[in-house]
Length: 120
Image (cartoon, rainbow, N blue to C red):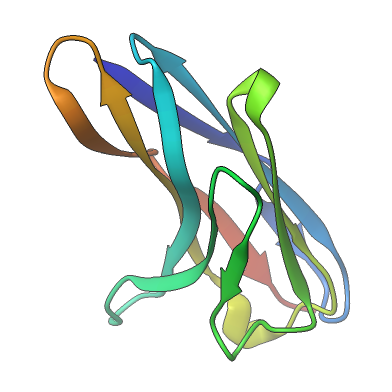
C-alpha cells in the first residue's frame, strides 16, 4: 500500500505565493511520474502539471510561467511552487503519483487534497 500526503495549502492574497509539498510513503520500489491536479467547485479535476522521474516537466497553459514543479527522489517528494496567484487558482490541489510496488506491480495513488484559496 502506498500513500501520498500533501501539505502547504492555505489562504493567500492575489499576487502572492504558496508552496505545496507531497510526500510518498509505503511499500514501493520506484516512483515514476508525479504530478499535481486541482479541482474547483463545480469543475472537473484538471492537471496542473507533472514531472518525470528524470525531471522533465509539463504544465497546463493556465499556470505556465507562474507555477514550478520539482521533486526530490531521495525524499520521495514532489513540490509545487505557486507564484503570482490569481483568484481563479482557488481549488483543492491533489498530488498524484505512479508507483512500482513489490506486491501488485504498477499502481497509482492520490493524496487527500489541500485547499488553496486566493482572495483579498
